[in-house]
Image 1 (cartoon, rainbow, N blue to C red):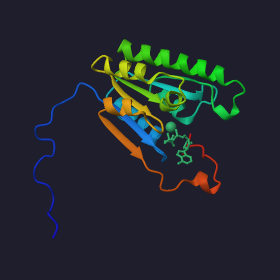
Image 2: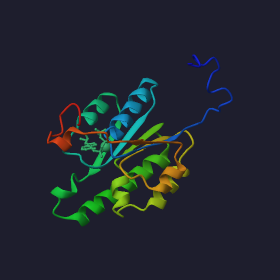
Image 3: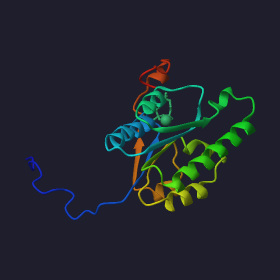
Length: 187
Ligand code: ATP
Ligand code: MG
């Protein structure tokens, strides 16, 4: 027999946080799109918003960047693009470190109420960015700054300091059946 609808508010006794840290990880599609969904919500509250996109080259102008600019989001794509297109990985590493230095400054400045660090886990997992620096910057951020981190294989140290962690599970993906990334859906 069904228990019927809940009659008590599930958040009775819950406290209001000044900010939270959200991590979207896992192999399935949706980590970045979910982060941009939060950006939409925050935009509706007139928050000042920032995105630092690691890996993706500023030359690509992905759809989310275009839309975010219309919402007045401060947007930095400081990656060099795909590592498999790269002829100089040490250059990519230097660029990733630069992107991180910038992201750290944005977090510490506290000018933005939401900072999305898109694809941050990849350069961390390749050993290009020191995870303890990232944890330190997140833990010591100004208390009103919300953070969303995306990317596969989120390091345990980041999961530890996050408030909400979601693992996207890959049930199936068109790419595995030979379908190319689709403009408007995938970028
Ligand atoms: P999205 O940006 O679509 O939310 P994502 O952020 O979860 O994807 P990333 O690891 O950042 O995933 O990969 C970025 C690109 O790879 C996107 O074009 C996305 O559609 C595609 N992608 C995501 N998951 C998979 C998968 N399991 N297999 C193949 N391609 C994927
Ligand atoms: Mg992504």
